[in-house]
Image (cartoon, rainbow, N blue to C red; front, side, top):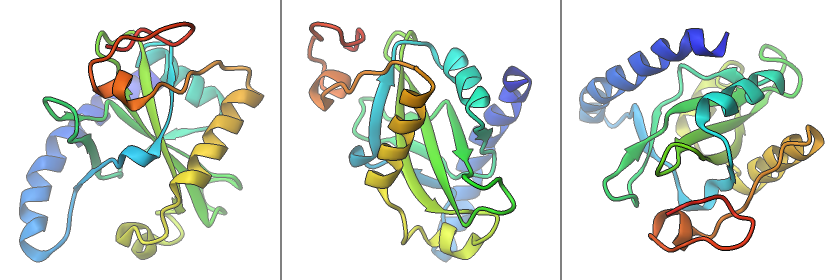
Length: 175
């Protein structure tokens, strides 16, 4: 089922830039930079496999999310997908765990960025203002969910993920 919605993800990515240009004229946004401190982990799987894992863990594709990008990459890159997890279900949860996925350099790995925030369904204004975003809580919860499911991940230093350094040991092959 996750692959059936990828075309909507591509549509969201294409429309976001157009919307952002218009919205920015009145102080709003449709694109946002993913802060470095939201990096949670790297998976040794390409993002289509990660998406299937997310689906099994109860995440849903977040098609209304603003388009996220890593501007500290050269060249800047946008997310390949956005996913959300609601602890009490989408309609009952006050908060959500939001994951942004970035494909690794050779597309064989996936970098996962996470944050905890007000649910866009229950608290759309608080969500849009992004004043209650908690990266640490989101990272802890994402790691916990993956550990409970037995899904291995690596925490790769930024210099190796985005700085062009070589990896060593059991870490995934990142630049």
